[in-house]
Length: 136
Image (cartoon, rainbow, N blue to C red):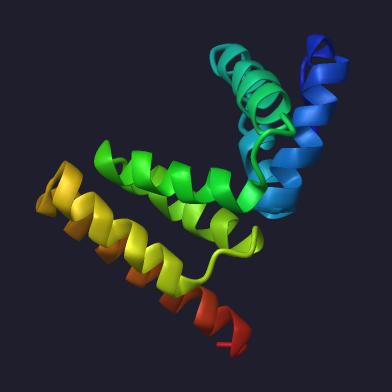
């Protein structure tokens, strides 16, 4: 990992550990390998504050945080982040049925188009996960 020296803080390292546990090493390694002078500040911010500070708080279990993230990202119609957080949610013990229920709730309260786009992303992600598990 070729990251700037200012990444080596207690909060960054805490966030990095949580980020790896939720999203997996492969994703985190790809993100950090792509760090350059322009993207370094956002990677530091996300790792420290999103993962270290917020995901590291004891007030909610990771499964609940994952369900909340999926609902917010679906409502915002952010397919790349939905895809990423579907994988994270599964790692945090969320079931496919629970993800389906989140998207049904999103459809009613945030709009059917956002829910449909997120449903498509989930189906694609499930297929990728199933294919990898089957060794395809």
